[in-house]
Length: 573
View (cartoon, rainbow, N blue to C red):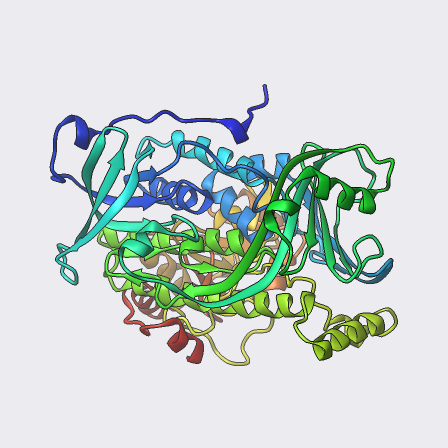
């Protein structure tokens, strides 16, 4: 039986603090504010690492309408680790190809995943209410997550900031009155209007774009291919732009640019929406309107994502235009970056200063997303006659000249940031490696096999620090084998994974067979090469040999480094 996630409602329940009449005596390890995709992903990741989480939300429903629909390969890889990636992909519409049109002629197309050997597609389209529903069901299956609906944060007090006893006490409003809720750390994943941010007297800075766009979710049978189609100045909507995406359940997402002077109330009426959709689909097309919204957007972020023991993630920390699908995808990456660091700090494996790296790394990533998002929006919605002439010239030249196609920008689609300047990086020799797997990069996938059968490399990475070693036990010298054993027996849990192209590798414990040689190719993995992988599947360090002392030093750096104060400092590093 299918579940109508759009119309689920969750009952308010009083909590232990209310029932026992406690005055904030219990200090929970982590409180997450906001049960959207980012809050749910953060809570699940923490819970899977043994951290108890209280998740509060001021509402009692999931998302209405499609909202965020494009989920990138990196996000799917994270969802795999959270235990719900397969459901997302099975329900979602997978796509790799996008096309750009000027008026009624194609000028450009692209393939976001031109090579084989990856478990997940470049993108899936999936309505946000499905994403939230699948994440929620995963969260409900974990015993160390408490979910509290209709518990609204109306006050924030930081106690003993800067000390080992630091905590945060929230005042939470419910239908039965207010109560204090204390946590050592609070993750504010409460959206672009973030009440937590406002209660702390903080704001976001950036640029607001004076334009309006109409979203129409249209239910229909159609023979459009499963691709991303973007029109500039189409005959059916002249002087503006249109974006078309397919979603599950025969729902199509259409975005119409309207211009700043459009009346947002009037434009949402069926009398205005239906003729626009008919102009695109044809006068005889049969369809139903499922959801309609008019939106504007800004590109902005907070100066710092960490304020004492309150950490901001997702839209509460940064906002971008919808072109490029960078909002929800970057928010899920925030959650992954933050969760392992919070877990390590709470488990005593790392200093509290490790959380500063969450702020600096994700501020750096946000700046990259903001640059790309701003450039996309400026190209799509030129604000001067000269900018319009430039854009149209680029589009015209793109029909015949490859150099111009790189200038076409209908939304540079989300890719994970390479954290080049992260203080957690170490152990790289200039010229010793080729390829893209530099320290700070996100690990790429490849088909592998082990004793259980065929699988994927990323299934064996993440969740803890991992030493990925190219070579088999028999091919390593005695010193290398001793070094690996010493690392596995150390105080910090370290998984050792050996990978080889030999058939015997798949049958040995802790060994993988590089089925198509793609892992060695993508990681430039000669025998004896070792990659140190972070719990969030970012490369931390790499060497052309196995040196236990060097690896231990890199682990110590990755769990206790002193950090630049801002993302700007990281960017300049």
